[in-house]
Picture 1 (cartoon, rainbow, N blue to C red):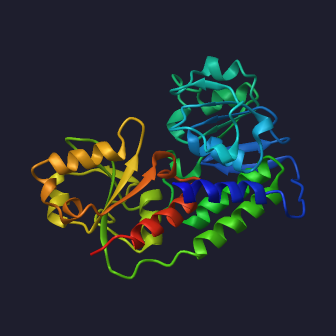
Picture 2 (cartoon, one colour; picture 1 turned 90 degrees about the vertical axis):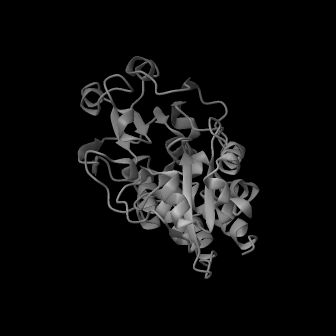
Length: 310
């Protein structure tokens, strides 16, 4: 975790050290099948979910953020943002969002934009508010299997929208360099990504951030054949696969330690080699979804993986 946050600090600081570029407005984009026309750089953005908030902060846009909501954990201190109003611990209503007089709403999930949530995208557009969904979280249009290049594309696009292309370019360069410093493990290890759940484990499948991160680490995901980001599995299937490594997502509502306890006490999973030998990799929940924390997570988890004995 310490490695992840220090890398984020470097990335945030370095985003100011390249020649400037200027966005040519109006900017026309297609976002999850929804056409956008950005007439000027947003001045009052609302970020829903940690991935959205952390990307804007990594680009130095804290002063242009009217509020954040539905965060998955504390914002990394290196990114700042502690003075930005928290609109809601959960998904905010359209009324709560509109009270901030936003001109842009950035959602980490497409489901954030519902009538009983932040508001439907068409409705917000009619009110003069642009909206953007993290491309990896599209549902109206099924996204391709996530890659780091796609993630860097989102950073670049946000740089265009906010007229900070120079900062976006610097952030991408730093992340590419950090990613390039990681050599995939050569031990032909298998792994399961345990996100949540007790009776029914919710695991990383073959097409989103878990798959992307495990591939970068050189791990073979036992659920790679499932064409989804995450999927419901069974303990029996996991036991049958007997993965060498278990990735644990550390969330406030379902901590890594709670997961370890469950795995050790469950009569079925307690027999897994990875459980017996404590072969765990841990990452915080905000790093488990597509965002600026993915690369720092790979760097940190590679160090953890190198320390495991087989």
